Length: 302
Image (cartoon, rainbow, N blue to C red):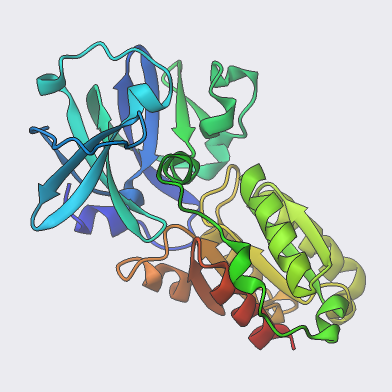
Protein backbone atom coordinates (compact mmCIF):
# COMPACT_ATOMS: atom_id res chain seq x y z
CA UNK A 1 0.00 0.00 0.00
CA UNK A 2 1.44 3.33 -1.00
CA UNK A 3 1.67 6.24 1.37
CA UNK A 4 -0.37 8.30 -1.08
CA UNK A 5 -3.34 5.99 -0.60
CA UNK A 6 -3.36 6.68 3.14
CA UNK A 7 -3.97 10.40 2.73
CA UNK A 8 -6.59 10.39 -0.01
CA UNK A 9 -9.54 11.42 2.12
CA UNK A 10 -10.31 15.09 2.43
CA UNK A 11 -10.04 16.39 6.00
CA UNK A 12 -13.16 16.77 8.10
CA UNK A 13 -15.57 14.57 6.09
CA UNK A 14 -16.12 12.18 9.03
CA UNK A 15 -15.06 9.31 6.76
CA UNK A 16 -12.22 6.85 6.96
CA UNK A 17 -10.82 4.00 4.95
CA UNK A 18 -10.21 0.69 6.66
CA UNK A 19 -8.19 -2.37 5.72
CA UNK A 20 -10.10 -5.50 6.65
CA UNK A 21 -8.24 -8.67 7.59
CA UNK A 22 -8.73 -11.90 9.46
CA UNK A 23 -7.02 -13.52 12.41
CA UNK A 24 -8.34 -17.02 12.90
CA UNK A 25 -12.10 -16.93 12.29
CA UNK A 26 -12.39 -13.27 13.34
CA UNK A 27 -12.72 -10.24 11.06
CA UNK A 28 -10.83 -7.08 12.04
CA UNK A 29 -9.94 -3.72 10.54
CA UNK A 30 -7.30 -1.02 10.83
CA UNK A 31 -7.45 2.61 9.75
CA UNK A 32 -5.60 3.06 6.45
CA UNK A 33 -3.89 6.13 7.92
CA UNK A 34 -2.01 3.80 10.28
CA UNK A 35 -0.87 1.47 7.51
CA UNK A 36 2.41 2.13 5.76
CA UNK A 37 2.66 -1.09 3.79
CA UNK A 38 1.33 -4.64 3.53
CA UNK A 39 3.92 -7.25 2.57
CA UNK A 40 4.47 -10.97 2.46
CA UNK A 41 6.18 -12.33 5.58
CA UNK A 42 9.81 -13.36 5.80
CA UNK A 43 11.96 -14.95 8.53
CA UNK A 44 11.98 -13.19 11.90
CA UNK A 45 14.98 -12.85 14.21
CA UNK A 46 13.90 -13.82 17.71
CA UNK A 47 14.69 -11.56 20.66
CA UNK A 48 15.41 -13.21 24.05
CA UNK A 49 13.03 -12.42 26.92
CA UNK A 50 10.63 -10.45 24.73
CA UNK A 51 6.86 -10.36 25.26
CA UNK A 52 5.17 -13.62 24.28
CA UNK A 53 3.25 -11.86 21.48
CA UNK A 54 6.46 -10.47 19.95
CA UNK A 55 7.89 -12.98 17.51
CA UNK A 56 11.08 -10.98 17.10
CA UNK A 57 12.35 -8.32 14.73
CA UNK A 58 12.88 -7.91 10.99
CA UNK A 59 14.70 -5.36 8.88
CA UNK A 60 12.60 -3.45 6.36
CA UNK A 61 14.42 -0.89 4.20
CA UNK A 62 17.06 -0.33 6.82
CA UNK A 63 14.65 -0.10 9.77
CA UNK A 64 14.51 -2.72 12.53
CA UNK A 65 10.85 -3.35 13.32
CA UNK A 66 9.21 -5.60 15.94
CA UNK A 67 6.77 -8.24 14.72
CA UNK A 68 3.63 -8.65 16.84
CA UNK A 69 1.63 -11.81 16.28
CA UNK A 70 -1.95 -10.57 16.64
CA UNK A 71 -3.31 -14.08 17.12
CA UNK A 72 -1.08 -14.49 20.18
CA UNK A 73 -1.78 -10.95 21.44
CA UNK A 74 -5.54 -11.54 21.25
CA UNK A 75 -5.47 -15.14 22.50
CA UNK A 76 -6.84 -16.41 19.21
CA UNK A 77 -5.83 -19.38 17.09
CA UNK A 78 -4.21 -18.65 13.75
CA UNK A 79 -5.47 -20.83 10.90
CA UNK A 80 -2.71 -20.04 8.40
CA UNK A 81 0.84 -21.39 8.14
CA UNK A 82 3.33 -18.59 8.84
CA UNK A 83 4.48 -18.42 5.23
CA UNK A 84 0.90 -17.77 4.10
CA UNK A 85 0.21 -14.90 6.49
CA UNK A 86 0.68 -11.17 5.90
CA UNK A 87 2.72 -8.41 7.56
CA UNK A 88 0.90 -5.10 8.13
CA UNK A 89 3.51 -2.40 8.71
CA UNK A 90 1.87 0.22 10.89
CA UNK A 91 2.90 3.60 12.32
CA UNK A 92 1.31 4.90 15.52
CA UNK A 93 2.36 6.56 18.77
CA UNK A 94 5.58 7.77 17.10
CA UNK A 95 6.73 4.23 16.35
CA UNK A 96 6.52 1.60 13.62
CA UNK A 97 5.49 -1.99 14.27
CA UNK A 98 4.49 -4.99 12.19
CA UNK A 99 1.29 -6.91 12.88
CA UNK A 100 1.20 -10.48 11.60
CA UNK A 101 -2.32 -11.39 10.45
CA UNK A 102 -3.76 -14.41 8.67
CA UNK A 103 -5.22 -12.79 5.58
CA UNK A 104 -5.75 -9.25 4.27
CA UNK A 105 -8.98 -8.64 2.36
CA UNK A 106 -9.67 -5.16 1.01
CA UNK A 107 -9.92 -1.44 1.63
CA UNK A 108 -13.38 -0.04 2.36
CA UNK A 109 -14.51 3.54 2.85
CA UNK A 110 -17.00 4.06 5.67
CA UNK A 111 -18.30 6.84 7.89
CA UNK A 112 -17.42 7.12 11.56
CA UNK A 113 -21.21 7.22 12.10
CA UNK A 114 -21.28 3.54 11.13
CA UNK A 115 -18.92 2.64 13.97
CA UNK A 116 -20.44 1.80 17.35
CA UNK A 117 -18.67 1.79 20.67
CA UNK A 118 -17.53 -1.63 21.97
CA UNK A 119 -20.18 -3.72 23.67
CA UNK A 120 -21.03 -7.35 24.23
CA UNK A 121 -20.71 -7.81 20.46
CA UNK A 122 -16.93 -7.58 20.83
CA UNK A 123 -16.80 -11.38 21.23
CA UNK A 124 -14.75 -11.24 24.41
CA UNK A 125 -12.32 -8.66 23.02
CA UNK A 126 -13.88 -5.57 24.64
CA UNK A 127 -10.63 -4.57 26.34
CA UNK A 128 -8.76 -4.33 23.04
CA UNK A 129 -11.59 -3.09 20.81
CA UNK A 130 -12.20 0.58 20.06
CA UNK A 131 -15.17 0.19 17.72
CA UNK A 132 -17.54 -2.17 15.95
CA UNK A 133 -18.82 -1.82 12.40
CA UNK A 134 -21.42 -3.98 10.63
CA UNK A 135 -20.78 -4.32 6.90
CA UNK A 136 -22.37 -6.71 4.43
CA UNK A 137 -23.97 -8.64 7.27
CA UNK A 138 -20.65 -9.14 9.04
CA UNK A 139 -19.32 -7.74 12.31
CA UNK A 140 -15.88 -6.15 11.98
CA UNK A 141 -13.87 -5.14 15.03
CA UNK A 142 -11.67 -2.04 14.99
CA UNK A 143 -8.91 -2.80 17.48
CA UNK A 144 -7.26 -0.40 19.92
CA UNK A 145 -3.81 -0.82 18.41
CA UNK A 146 -2.28 1.84 20.66
CA UNK A 147 -3.32 -0.07 23.76
CA UNK A 148 -2.07 -3.35 22.34
CA UNK A 149 1.33 -1.86 21.50
CA UNK A 150 1.63 -0.03 24.85
CA UNK A 151 0.86 -3.17 26.84
CA UNK A 152 3.30 -5.27 24.83
CA UNK A 153 6.17 -2.78 24.63
CA UNK A 154 5.85 -1.35 28.12
CA UNK A 155 5.96 2.14 26.65
CA UNK A 156 3.18 4.59 27.22
CA UNK A 157 2.17 7.60 29.23
CA UNK A 158 4.63 8.57 31.93
CA UNK A 159 3.32 11.31 34.20
CA UNK A 160 6.50 11.13 36.28
CA UNK A 161 7.94 13.58 33.77
CA UNK A 162 5.43 16.12 35.11
CA UNK A 163 6.85 15.96 38.63
CA UNK A 164 9.00 19.04 38.12
CA UNK A 165 6.32 20.98 36.27
CA UNK A 166 5.77 24.50 37.56
CA UNK A 167 2.45 24.77 39.37
CA UNK A 168 0.21 27.63 38.24
CA UNK A 169 -2.85 28.38 40.36
CA UNK A 170 -4.89 29.83 37.50
CA UNK A 171 -4.94 26.40 35.82
CA UNK A 172 -7.65 25.38 38.27
CA UNK A 173 -10.03 28.00 36.86
CA UNK A 174 -9.95 26.68 33.31
CA UNK A 175 -12.59 24.28 32.00
CA UNK A 176 -11.34 21.69 29.52
CA UNK A 177 -13.50 19.41 27.39
CA UNK A 178 -11.87 16.14 26.31
CA UNK A 179 -13.16 13.87 23.53
CA UNK A 180 -11.40 10.49 23.76
CA UNK A 181 -12.90 7.06 23.13
CA UNK A 182 -10.29 5.07 25.06
CA UNK A 183 -11.22 4.59 28.73
CA UNK A 184 -7.54 4.03 29.50
CA UNK A 185 -6.62 7.36 27.90
CA UNK A 186 -9.45 9.21 29.63
CA UNK A 187 -8.15 8.01 32.98
CA UNK A 188 -4.55 8.92 32.11
CA UNK A 189 -5.54 12.38 30.90
CA UNK A 190 -7.61 13.00 34.01
CA UNK A 191 -4.70 12.00 36.26
CA UNK A 192 -2.05 13.97 34.37
CA UNK A 193 -4.08 17.13 33.86
CA UNK A 194 -5.15 17.06 37.50
CA UNK A 195 -1.56 16.65 38.64
CA UNK A 196 -0.68 19.72 36.57
CA UNK A 197 -3.46 21.72 38.23
CA UNK A 198 -6.24 21.46 35.64
CA UNK A 199 -9.09 20.07 37.71
CA UNK A 200 -12.19 21.15 35.77
CA UNK A 201 -12.64 18.58 33.02
CA UNK A 202 -15.59 17.15 31.11
CA UNK A 203 -15.01 13.87 29.27
CA UNK A 204 -16.81 12.50 26.21
CA UNK A 205 -16.32 9.09 24.60
CA UNK A 206 -16.83 10.35 21.05
CA UNK A 207 -16.88 13.53 19.00
CA UNK A 208 -20.65 13.56 18.57
CA UNK A 209 -21.25 13.73 22.33
CA UNK A 210 -18.68 16.50 22.74
CA UNK A 211 -20.15 18.54 19.88
CA UNK A 212 -23.69 18.20 21.23
CA UNK A 213 -22.62 19.69 24.57
CA UNK A 214 -20.53 22.47 22.98
CA UNK A 215 -23.39 23.39 20.63
CA UNK A 216 -25.76 23.43 23.60
CA UNK A 217 -23.46 25.90 25.35
CA UNK A 218 -23.27 28.04 22.23
CA UNK A 219 -27.05 28.09 21.84
CA UNK A 220 -27.74 28.91 25.48
CA UNK A 221 -24.82 31.24 26.22
CA UNK A 222 -23.76 32.62 22.81
CA UNK A 223 -20.37 34.34 23.27
CA UNK A 224 -20.65 33.89 27.04
CA UNK A 225 -20.06 30.19 26.40
CA UNK A 226 -16.35 30.87 26.83
CA UNK A 227 -16.93 31.47 30.52
CA UNK A 228 -17.89 27.79 30.72
CA UNK A 229 -15.38 26.19 28.35
CA UNK A 230 -11.83 27.30 27.62
CA UNK A 231 -10.33 24.48 25.54
CA UNK A 232 -11.13 21.26 23.69
CA UNK A 233 -8.70 18.33 23.50
CA UNK A 234 -9.78 15.73 20.97
CA UNK A 235 -8.59 12.40 19.66
CA UNK A 236 -8.97 11.75 15.93
CA UNK A 237 -10.29 8.18 15.80
CA UNK A 238 -13.62 7.95 17.61
CA UNK A 239 -16.97 6.22 16.94
CA UNK A 240 -19.80 8.34 15.50
CA UNK A 241 -17.67 11.44 14.85
CA UNK A 242 -13.92 11.77 14.47
CA UNK A 243 -11.78 14.59 15.80
CA UNK A 244 -11.13 16.16 12.40
CA UNK A 245 -14.85 16.54 11.67
CA UNK A 246 -15.50 17.77 15.21
CA UNK A 247 -12.81 20.42 14.81
CA UNK A 248 -14.11 21.46 11.39
CA UNK A 249 -17.67 21.96 12.66
CA UNK A 250 -16.41 24.08 15.55
CA UNK A 251 -14.11 26.20 13.40
CA UNK A 252 -16.82 26.72 10.74
CA UNK A 253 -19.17 28.19 13.36
CA UNK A 254 -19.21 31.96 13.90
CA UNK A 255 -19.85 31.48 17.62
CA UNK A 256 -17.77 28.39 18.40
CA UNK A 257 -14.71 29.09 16.22
CA UNK A 258 -12.95 31.01 19.00
CA UNK A 259 -12.68 27.81 21.04
CA UNK A 260 -9.04 26.58 21.04
CA UNK A 261 -8.75 22.97 19.85
CA UNK A 262 -5.81 20.63 20.43
CA UNK A 263 -5.76 17.36 18.50
CA UNK A 264 -4.06 14.67 20.61
CA UNK A 265 -3.68 11.52 18.54
CA UNK A 266 -1.41 8.67 17.54
CA UNK A 267 -2.01 9.78 13.94
CA UNK A 268 -0.03 13.04 14.22
CA UNK A 269 2.81 12.33 11.79
CA UNK A 270 4.71 14.49 9.33
CA UNK A 271 2.61 13.07 6.51
CA UNK A 272 -0.75 13.64 8.23
CA UNK A 273 -0.14 16.90 10.13
CA UNK A 274 -1.72 18.88 7.28
CA UNK A 275 -5.09 17.23 7.93
CA UNK A 276 -5.39 18.92 11.33
CA UNK A 277 -4.23 22.21 9.86
CA UNK A 278 -6.87 21.98 7.13
CA UNK A 279 -9.71 21.83 9.66
CA UNK A 280 -8.32 24.69 11.77
CA UNK A 281 -6.84 22.94 14.81
CA UNK A 282 -4.88 25.36 17.01
CA UNK A 283 -2.31 22.69 17.90
CA UNK A 284 -1.58 19.01 17.34
CA UNK A 285 0.32 16.64 19.60
CA UNK A 286 1.30 13.06 18.95
CA UNK A 287 0.46 10.52 21.61
CA UNK A 288 1.96 9.70 24.06
CA UNK A 289 3.66 13.11 24.60
CA UNK A 290 1.72 14.30 27.67
CA UNK A 291 4.36 16.86 28.65
CA UNK A 292 4.07 18.66 25.30
CA UNK A 293 0.29 18.53 25.63
CA UNK A 294 0.38 20.30 29.00
CA UNK A 295 2.68 22.97 27.56
CA UNK A 296 0.28 23.65 24.69
CA UNK A 297 -2.72 23.77 27.02
CA UNK A 298 -0.89 26.41 29.07
CA UNK A 299 -0.07 28.38 25.95
CA UNK A 300 -3.66 28.43 24.73
CA UNK A 301 -5.59 29.11 27.94
CA UNK A 302 -3.29 31.00 30.34
